[in-house]
Image (cartoon, rainbow, N blue to C red; front, side, top):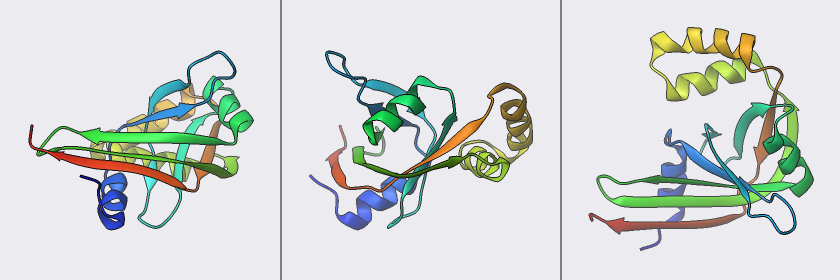
Length: 141
């Protein structure tokens, strides 16, 4: 059963690990990778990625991408959202901290941000406007 607009937006706003997919070009399947993301109901989705990553290059070329999130309990549920990139900006330490706090326990946020600053290189914030949604709650399996 498809989710209502409010249900799908609330589900996407939860801190799931997303599968990000973007076209990898002719005669290729899409590049699909796990990623952290941020979303507030009614707003845009944003992700952070290394500025020199294949993912960043492909998103720039395609001008759009898809995120899919799912859970298995208490019922099987998923939301997929696809849309155009509205802007790409240099990533900031504040955004890295916000993202880490979304996914990690409080005591691990600082060490993760230090690791990211030292090891992950320049980051980009890529913002997408949700345009097409697919969703379902398949009930308890």
